[in-house]
Length: 80
Picture 1: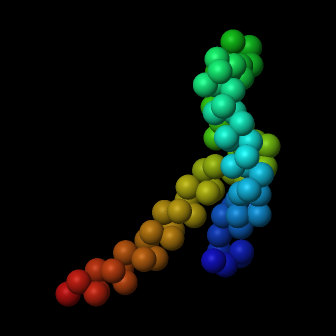
Picture 2: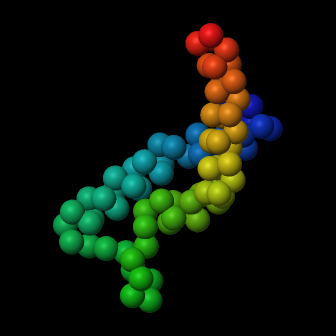
């Protein structure tokens, strides 16, 4: 994976272990009835983790689509 081509994925890869741990902890808390709220609004894990890590979730999604688009033409040629 190219850092220049997929910078948000590179950021995500660099913090994957830490964010997985935090996600697991937040899930554990919710299972125990403890939820994170701000001004009465429930905060989703993914949104908090994106903010915490500085990863732009919309750019990350665009990169995912670009990856899929780069694979699809190759896949279509193989099936012919």
